[in-house]
Amino acid sequence: MEKGNLDKASKPTLQPDPTIAKQKRPGKDLLDTISSHEHSIAESNDSLRKLESDLNKKEVELIEKELKLLSMQQELENVRPLSGLYRVVKAMATERKLESILDVITRETSSMLQCDRCSVFVLDSAQGELWTQMAQGLNGQHTIRLPLSCTSVVTLCARSGNSINIPDAYSDSRFDPEVDKSTGYQTKNILCVPMHNRNGSVIGVFEVMNKEKGSFNADDEEWLEALAQVAAGLIEQAQAYAEIEHFVDKTVETLAQTIDKRDPLTAGHSIRVTKYSLAIGEAMAVSENERDILRYAAMMHDYGKIGVPESILWKNGRLTPEEYACVQTHAKLTYELLSNLPFTNRLAQVPFVASCHHEKLDGTGYYRGLKGDEIPFLARVITVSDVFDALTSVRHYRNRMNIVKVYEIMESGRDNHFDPEVIDSFYRLPGSQVLQVMESERGMQIPDSVRNFDSISWLRLVELCQGAKAKRHEEGMKELFYSIYNANLPADYQELD
Ligand SMILES: [Fe+2]
Image 1 (spheres, protein in one colour):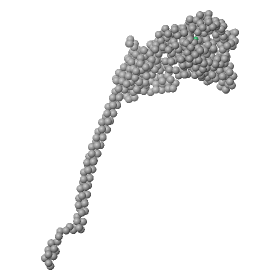
Image 2 (cartoon, rainbow, N blue to C red):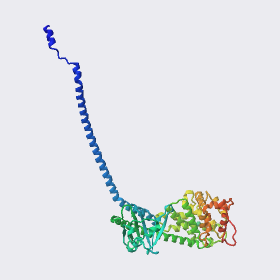
Image 3 (cartoon, protein in one colour):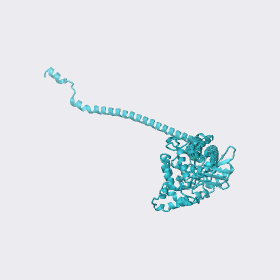
């Protein structure tokens, strides 16, 4: 063997054996895989830790949010009485009527003290009674009156002038279970607080019943006493306002009657014109303020007649042009006299509205000759009422006019004299309402039979009088109407125009 060959043979070159290499590779792969898995596990652990940390963070955030919410709710709970008190005080500035103020107070108190019922009892010292208003669903409200002498927690509170807190009504001798029997209400607990005026006299009682959770506590007593103080001031103010309003109403009515009553034939004219005007105003949804302007302006519209001689006002026959010119001065005098009265801002329009009742839409009326919208809407309402009452009343120069003729005259003035919307609203009034006003202030009993005209409009009643065929429920209405309308007319009554 050649050395070279032997060397070649004995010293084999260290070539990697591909099979060995192939055999070793799985181990390495395994190691790689393990390493890779370890890496993944490490990564997963990292992710898990991150996730855990994130979750912890979120949890902490959520807990924080919840705590915040709870604290906000607590804060809300804490300010609930304050916000209720604020709304009651705000009502003092916006509401004038006692009924509206009582309504706000009872609503807010129930919410503040979280109880089922709240009633404000007002003392009527003249009658020796406590009265309150109870909501009656859609039917509005009705008044409950309790004699001061009766046995109830409310009257006991008014008599003693002290607060009464009864945590368990049925185990307390001061509570009379008969009250629940008559009302069907299940009383659990009661808190009554008296309301005092500035002189320290009791003017009413605040009563809350059935606290939503538990019974009324010292905090509730404190809040109710604070509210009672505010309410007492509001009630006193509203009562004083109502007294003044009643006094002004009666004074205005008396002033108007001094003119009407100069002549028995016109007696009641201003009151009837006011009643028609208010009925039309209500049908046309005027505001509360407009209603007050309408009431005073309608009542006083003819006050300027105080300056017209009786020889002209009472003249039995047609007026000469000079006499008619004299009668016309009453509208201007109404304005001048009423302008001297210190009407408050919200009633400042009364003199102007009252003095426009002879204006006509086409500008041919008096005394300013106003046209269309220049004539205040409320004056247009009074105009329709005034003419209708004049035509349906006996006058020195003519008798009460046949109702069909009245309708024709009113219609001939549509668009030129009268506001058509006002006329139509008047026509839509129930026949009974128009007839009741028409027959009022005439010193005669209004028959109950006017209620028969509840179901038909005034216009329909006129149509029946015009000869329209009566439906079944309208049979006999025309005859009944004439029997009322023509009763007690003067013996020499003739249907003159
Ligand atoms: Fe007049």
